[in-house]
Amino acid sequence: MKRITLIIAIVLSGMLMQAQELWRGAEVGMTVNQIKEIFGDKLAPQSGVYTEYYSPYYLKVALVGEYPVRVDFVFTKDTKTLEFVNLEAIEGKADDVWKEFKNILIEKYGEPDDVDVSLYKVKRYIWEKDIQIFLEHITFGDLNKVQIQYHKIKP
Image (cartoon, rainbow, N blue to C red; front, side, top):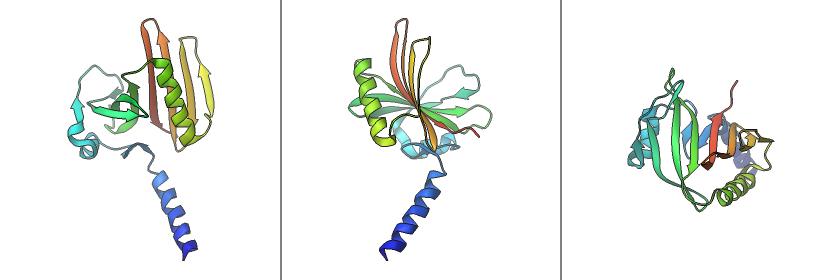
């Protein structure tokens, strides 16, 4: 009986992975209304000028480890479906936040598949799993921020 239960669990987990969950129930391809159903009154409206993407709502309060983050749900303008989720630290010293986020992601996903440091002062760790995960530390001029992005895998 335990063997059958284990096989069923493995099959179900494989089926769930295909949905490409980006972050806490938000899946690739969801509509704005579906995101609103999941997060409800925790979402706040926002506006702005966008090119191929738009983010009509952000999550007011979320934590990664001990640090509060702003969570933006980013949709494609043409299909109006969820493309990626961006989590930006809003408190804490950037170097400390970077270390904490890096440790959390390594604990969950293992060592990054790629590490990139650009000329534009962006340090990026990349995990290629069922989704693509970027951990970025951006230091450019007065900008000093840490963010995690969960993207769908491009075909």
